[in-house]
Amino acid sequence: MQEKFDIVVVGAGLVGLTAALACAKKGAKVCILDQKLPNIKGDMRASAISASSFVLLKNLDVIDSVVGNIQAIDKIFISDSRVGRKNKFNLKFQNLNHAKYKGYMIDNSILKNALLKTVNKSHDITVKAPVKILKTSTNRGKVKINLENNCIIEAFLLVAADGKDSRLRKSADISVRFTHYKQSAIVTTIGHEFAHNGSAHQFFFPGGPLALLPLTKNRSSIVWSDSSLASGATMSLNDSDFIDELSYRINGLLGKIKLLGPRQIFPLNLQMANRYTAKRLVLVGDAAHSIHPIAGQGLNLGLRDAAALADNVALSIRKGIDLGSDVIQEYEKWRSFDNNKLGITTDILNRLFSNKNRSIRFIRRLGLNGVNHSELLKTFFIEEASGLRGELPTLMIEK
Ligand SMILES: Cc1cc2nc3c(=O)[nH]c(=O)nc-3n(C[C@H](O)[C@H](O)[C@H](O)COP(=O)(O)OP(=O)(O)OC[C@H]3O[C@@H](n4cnc5c(N)ncnc54)[C@H](O)[C@@H]3O)c2cc1C
Image 1 (cartoon, helix red, strand yellow):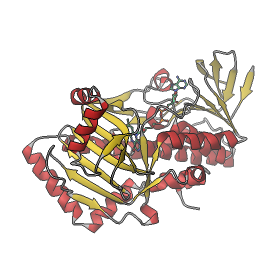
Image 2 (image 1 turned 30 degrees about the horizontal axis):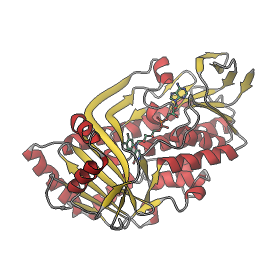
Image 3 (image 1 turned 180 degrees about the vertical axis):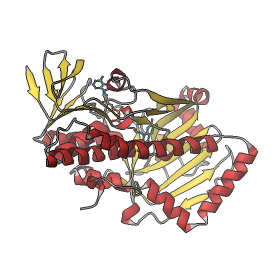
Image 4 (image 1 turned 45 degrees about the vertical axis):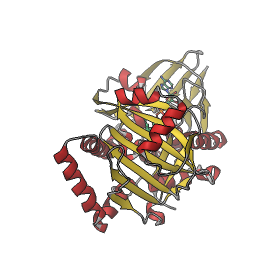
């Protein structure tokens, strides 16, 4: 059996689903392939969604189905901490209510469910999963994908949204720059006695940052980064000892806490692809870049890839240009600068904060306190985190 589409997206993760919706919105017929049945359970992570990502999800008709499950971040408190010391916040962002800058927290499972619902309603998107890709090849202005079930799919453009171990990236011989942080992040969700009041907290400990991020229904998401050795030991604690250790670290900030789900552990690294395109292929999301969660921006970058790609697709359709032609270079130019900039920033932040050196501690505290006293710098950082700096893809602009 042979089927034809404009675009094939490989990977039905958060970025692949968004890329499919964004390209379909701009007029393309899209097929999504995944090796697994899209599964909304099993990911304990929650994501910080920046203001510009929120607009994208709204423009793609995804937000309506998550109303009530999306928590606004009203305040951010940052502490350069030592374990066992009283909570002292060196940097505070307290006026995040402005619609332009508003960021949100959402459980990954809820966001994925909402994306899948919108994808399933679309007449321009076909999902095939689980499927096994045997081979991809380019021939006579098309990319051909051979599936294990004897189905052959043809399209003008292949989009690799197959995550940080991307097979498509490897088979296109695209190399990566890789830094192993020798850190891992433990992720889970907790319920707590005191209300979080929309506050996000980040404690910078010498082993790595511990983030406490507000979710709906008086819950918070924990992203606890530490050396891989220490994280392994923390993972091996039973639930009650884990909760005691966490309470001690956050100094009882939210009163009594309890686990609301399993704990998951993620090894952390920086991985940046050296190219984002090959013949009739573009990389999006973690297939192109995987960064430290210190600033909660990895998914936001992937969503911006998806929206930028959609602009590229729209331009090709409008001008009658082949979607997979050299026009994809424009996507690469646009996205690689933005992604590399954030990759480098998160790398520097992690090295600066996951550090016991006394002089570095002194300098970074001066820096945090300095930013805290400058409204101009605070606005600069908030605009960066909101994804509002630089050229915005059209789907990220409020209608
Ligand atoms: C601890 C932690 C916390 C984070 N917190 C945040 C945050 O607060 N905010 C934020 O913006 N980002 C955050 N991130 C980053 C974010 O989670 C990722 O950037 C994002 O999930 C990547 O999505 P993706 O769709 O690109 O890849 P993935 O989620 O990895 O999806 C890849 C998909 O491709 C499929 N696939 C893989 N190989 C094949 C194949 N050969 N054939 C077919 N299908 C295939 C997989 O089954 C999967 O469905 C965090 C990351 C970590 C580790």
